Image (tube, rainbow, N blue to C red):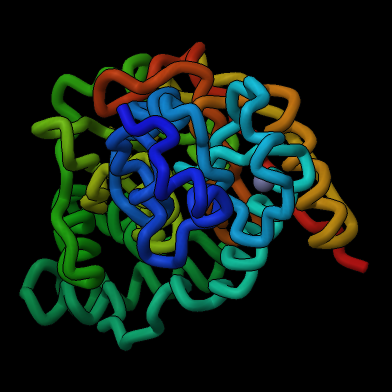
Length: 323
Ligand SMILES: [Zn+2]
C-alpha cells in the first residue's frame, strides 16, 4: 500500500490534486468506478481511501494536505471521494450542470416512422377496410391508440399489432416469461416505472437488462437506467395484455426508499442534493437526468450482483420548479 514516500512527501499537493487524466495514480485502491465508467456501483469506493492520503475528487479543492489526515468516511459521488462538505457540493454541482447541459442530447430521435396502420397494411396483416374502420372509431372517440382500435373494434390480433409496433420502432417484441417483479424493483424508482411505463423484465448474464415498454420505446429512460445501473439496456415492446398486469404487479412491489425534492434553481438543487449526500455518506452515489427529473441514487453498501438490494440504496428524485 503506497504510503508517504520521499517523493510523494514533496509532492503532497500533487497527491491531493492529481492532474487530469491521472486521477487513479493517487494512492487509491484499484477502483474502476470512476464517473463515466460502466461499473458495478459501490464495489470499491471503500477501498478508494485505503491510502493514508486519499485524494479529494474535487479538482478545485483547496484543503491543506494536512486536513486529509482526518478520518472522514465517505461520501463518494460518482466514484470520487470528497474531503469536505464544500467539495461534495462542488462535485454535485458539476454533475448537475453536466446533466442539465446534456438536455436534449439524448432525446428521442425524430426519425420518420411509418404509421402503424400503413405498416400493417403493407404487410397484409389488415385490410384497407379494417384500417379505415379503426381510424374512424379513433376519430369519433377523440383518442386512443390506433392499435387498440384495430384490436378492439376490428378484431385484429394483439400479437400482430405488437409485432407491427416492433417493426415501426425497429425493436424486438419481448416476452414476459418468468417475470420476477420483486427482484427487479431496485433497478429504477417506482415513480419512473409508473410515469414512463418502463418495465424491467429480466437481467441476462449479469450484464444486459431487458426493458419492456407498452406502445413506444423511451430511449431517454433507457439511457438513464443504463448509466445508473451500469447494465446494457435492451428495450423492446411487450404485448399490452401481458404488459399491464406485470406493470401493476411491479408497482405494488417493494421499492428502495425515495425522497422527492423540488428546487427553484440549479444552485439550490445542488445544495439540497449535496446536503443529502453529506448526511447519508454513501459508498457511492450517481446522478442522471431522466426527462425533466434528476435522479440521485446513493449506495449504502457495495453492490454485490447486477441488481442492488432494495434496502441498500436510497433514491432522490428532483425537479426544478419553473420560475
Ligand atoms: Zn476537497
